[in-house]
Image (cartoon, rainbow, N blue to C red; front, side):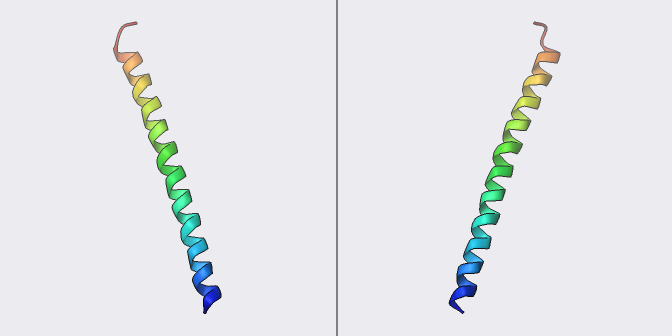
Amino acid sequence: MNTQKCHARVIMGIVGCTALVLAVSGASAAQAHGRDVARRTLPA
Protein backbone atom coordinates (compact mmCIF):
# COMPACT_ATOMS: atom_id res chain seq x y z
CA MET A 1 0.00 0.00 0.00
CA ASN A 2 2.84 2.37 0.84
CA THR A 3 4.56 1.59 -2.47
CA GLN A 4 1.37 2.45 -4.35
CA LYS A 5 1.17 5.87 -2.67
CA CYS A 6 4.80 6.58 -3.51
CA HIS A 7 4.27 5.43 -7.10
CA ALA A 8 1.24 7.70 -7.49
CA ARG A 9 3.27 10.64 -6.18
CA VAL A 10 6.07 9.97 -8.65
CA ILE A 11 3.59 9.80 -11.54
CA MET A 12 1.91 13.03 -10.41
CA GLY A 13 5.32 14.69 -10.21
CA ILE A 14 6.23 13.60 -13.73
CA VAL A 15 2.85 14.72 -15.09
CA GLY A 16 3.15 18.08 -13.31
CA CYS A 17 6.68 18.59 -14.60
CA THR A 18 5.68 17.72 -18.15
CA ALA A 19 2.69 20.08 -18.00
CA LEU A 20 4.96 22.88 -16.73
CA VAL A 21 7.51 22.32 -19.50
CA LEU A 22 4.76 22.25 -22.14
CA ALA A 23 3.20 25.43 -20.76
CA VAL A 24 6.55 27.26 -20.75
CA SER A 25 7.57 26.08 -24.23
CA GLY A 26 4.09 26.85 -25.55
CA ALA A 27 4.26 30.37 -24.10
CA SER A 28 7.67 31.05 -25.65
CA ALA A 29 6.51 29.69 -29.00
CA ALA A 30 3.46 31.96 -28.87
CA GLN A 31 5.66 34.95 -27.98
CA ALA A 32 8.04 34.21 -30.84
CA HIS A 33 5.08 33.88 -33.22
CA GLY A 34 3.69 37.21 -31.98
CA ARG A 35 7.03 38.90 -32.61
CA ASP A 36 7.18 37.51 -36.15
CA VAL A 37 3.68 38.80 -36.91
CA ALA A 38 4.57 42.22 -35.49
CA ARG A 39 7.70 42.31 -37.68
CA ARG A 40 5.67 41.52 -40.78
CA THR A 41 2.89 44.04 -40.11
CA LEU A 42 5.04 46.95 -38.88
CA PRO A 43 7.34 48.51 -41.47
CA ALA A 44 10.93 48.32 -40.20
